[in-house]
Amino acid sequence: MEEVRFIDLFAGIGGIRRGLEKQGFTCVFSSEWDEECAKTYEANFGEKPAGDITKIDEKTIPDHEILAGGFPCQAFSAAGKQKGFDDTRGTLFFDILRIAKEKKPKILFLENVKNLIYHNGRQTLKIIIKHLEELGYKVTYQVLNAKDYGVAQSRERIIIIASKDKPFDFGKIKPKNPNVKIKDILEKENSEMKFLSPEEYTILDKSLWKEQKTGMIFVGYRNKPIRKKGARPNTEHLSRVHKQCNRIYSSDGTHPTISSTEIAGRFHIYHNGKVRKLTINECFRLMGFPDSYKKISSNGERYRQIGNSVAIPMIEAVAEEIKNQLF
Ligand SMILES: C[S@@+](CC[C@H](N)C(=O)[O-])C[C@H]1O[C@@H](n2cnc3c(N)ncnc32)[C@H](O)[C@@H]1O
Image 1 (cartoon, rainbow, N blue to C red):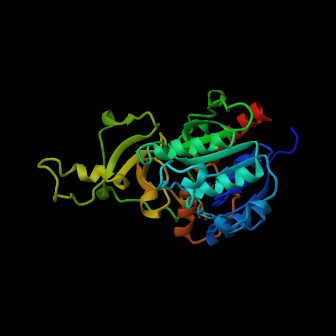
Image 2 (cartoon, protein in one colour; image 1 turned 180 degrees about the horizontal axis):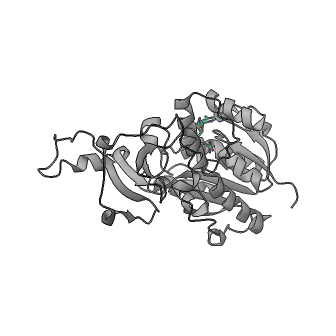
């Protein structure tokens, strides 16, 4: 393959970059305005990303074949009523469009939360596709789950691929190591691990443990005080289970989506008869980051960074197919 250059927008800590680099693509520009993320990025890739993308003149960005980015999702106020892409002005998607218009990359590789599909009564995605098509791209998209690509986390994300030549065919992406379980990536017991004592949780009878389609196995809940206010009679106990962070999942299955807050981001896991949360290293492993990845920020900041990132093996699987189909 000839050299394929990409730019890494909304770079975070470089999850997308790592996935693309693993398939042999070369990063020629990155942008991330959050100082803490930028420091982690620099420690790992040896390059400080440029700052606020809205302030960067598209003409100064190096030529590239792939524009990649997991952009923050925002509503478009004028919802497609105006001409050209002015109806996206003031959003970060507008910045993606103006760069694509100037630099004409062969491919745009966009990542977002699954909910982008339903955002603003489905208008957001419709407008995104319309504008990419107006620039001459053929657009396909699919929701993929990280658990199908070798990580023990159920994390659904939409991937949108805009291609100047033929449309990208998601049907050709093959799942890889789809059966990794939480227990496969756990660290040896150490002092960082905070176990709950047996009075603090309830494990359900084994006959009630069921593996969900997402690979998660719900096995119990924390004995948090029951919320009586607003609950219908005899359903008070459900408040414990309904509050997601009170749920306990077996290490024989997958972990729910890791989010960006330390409190809500990790669920309790049940492993070898004990209950605890994942360590920060285990969270990075659940996103497919190698142990050698440098984590230099404070602990709370690390959870935020990894929760906002991507499951690298899933990005890599898409990148591999881009290489096969479009280069
Ligand atoms: C969902 S995260 C993407 C994370 C990334 N894919 C990763 O692997 O870590 C979106 C990122 O966009 C950054 N961002 C938001 N607005 C920005 C702007 N105007 N300029 C540059 N970066 C921006 C945020 O700081 C955040 O880190």
